[in-house]
Image (cartoon, rainbow, N blue to C red; front, side):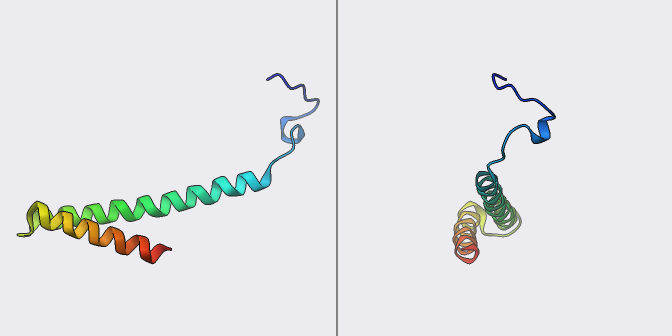
Length: 74
């Protein structure tokens, strides 16, 4: 707001491309890990609700699959 640019906004300010790429890579990493967490949560809920595993069985499946997912994604 305080800057005065002459001409269109598309060419007014220089872009910081390394910062854009860093943000994009961070977004991709966050999306990847959140997708794994939601998938593992759904599997653990299915184990907990629809089998004889109960709460502790679902929690055990959740922790094991979460650790395995994070190790495999690295």
